[in-house]
Length: 326
Image 1 (cartoon, rainbow, N blue to C red):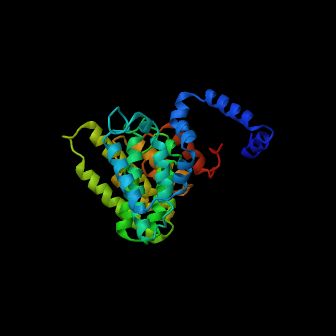
Image 2: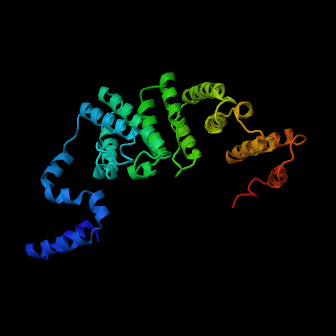
Image 3: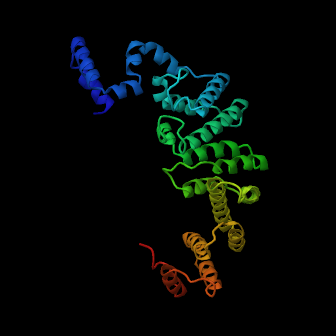
């Protein structure tokens, strides 16, 4: 039933009958739902709640609240029992987060208040990214609770930052946004493609490649045999994600040979056949079949390709590019 239909139906009843309906509906609401949506307080303080909902916070007040929220969440006060954040607030954290996200986005990005808002949105983004992998709130599904996918959040911040111009310090901030924990609910490709979609000029694409390469070199310098497996694995995984990102940007710039060279230089994979398979997958994804064939043939004497690649090569060589499309 739509709200408009509900209102029409309620017109049929007297005041006492409406009271009875409310009581019966209240009885049917599970306790957990009452707590999550603060139903009791809504009934007791309806006018106060409406007044608060309609009142927009200043950027100064938002900054204080968001900073405190991040400090508490980073100290795991929303994930475990404590005397600072009570049980009710711990379970209702998402309502506070949604309010922050909505209100911060109300500030135009190219204003003084908007710059602060973008900074706070970025801090929250990193918090929710971390929380999607390490218990920070009552569940790992931080972006789901917020109601905004991680890649959508990424796009929102990038657009707010890039509206200020094609500056290298801004691009470094943007590249940092994909150098973080990825929500397990989405693929890393969702993040990379969203990042690339925001680079709408040649200058931005070239600047992104430059910054990405600098970040890769920095990460490579941190890999050490003395470090733990997990530490090195995280570094290597992110180096590979950044390498894939640069490859796609090179392809969009029609500098495919440079992209292939970049991929060979930085992608970390000891098994040569697997590394080539990944590269060929990207060339196929971007429908660069001539380069696919050239790359395949260049390594025929060195690599024993898997059967699926051999089959593709035979068809692509004949010009049957649609053969493997379902």
